[in-house]
Structure formats: C-alpha cells, structure tokens
Length: 151
Image (cartoon, rainbow, N blue to C red; front, side, top):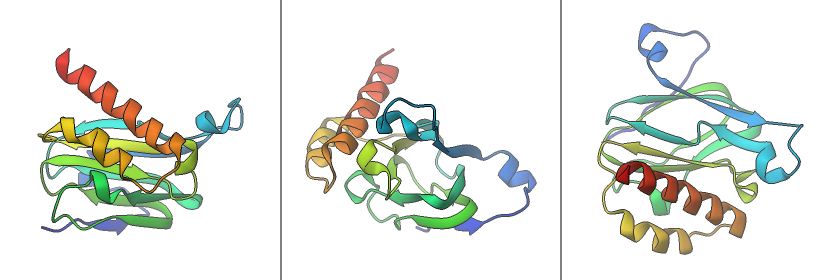
C-alpha cells in the first residue's frame, strides 16, 4: 500500500473533489486550545479519497500518529508546504496532529470506510507520547465519532 503526498500550487479536477483541511491560527481565541486547529477536525471519507491540507507552512505541520494509524500504511509528515494532498489507501482510522501545536489540542481524525474496533482506541491514546491536552482532544474526537455512529 502506498500513501501519496504531493505539493500543489494549482488545482486539478481530481483535487477539486478532495476534502479540504485548513490549519487555523485564530488570534481571537481566548485560549491556546482554541487558537490552533484543523478545520474540520473529524472527517468521514471513503478509502482512496484524498485530503487537501492547506497552510502546512511556518507554524503548522501535518504528522500522522502511529498509535492511531492503519497497519502497513506509510506515515505522513508534511511541513513547509502551502498545499499538500494525502490519499487514504485503505479503510481505517487516521489520526493527524500538528507537531508544533498538538500540545494545545491541534489534532484531527479521519475515518476512511470502516474504522475498525473503536473499543481499543482509548488504550492506544493512553500509550501515545503526547501531552494531556492532545490526548484529551483525541478522546473528544473519538467520542464524537462514536456518537455519530450510534445516531
């Protein structure tokens, strides 16, 4: 399996259908936990869908989280790119963080098709090498995902 990462300066028809993920720095936020974020931070997609990450430069990066990543799928590390495209090669739960702002809760989850057994996810989050705010942000996203699947 391969994951595709491509820098982009001009849109194509294929990229026009990609889910756009922006990385926000909101100076009006009252706390760092709301200042830095991915928008949207919870994405439902099909396998082989693409994500178009915007603004992965300067302050923000996009890195996969090994504990919440499909087995056999190469990890993602994007920095210093105004735009980058990631293709999700298989079903699963894909977790991303900003390496610089993850400590403030700048994280996101992508579900491609079947996310698998979510009952193991809390243990996987507990084993992450991350600060408490980052772990809390992932737990909150998993709770939102579980609620969406039930409802």
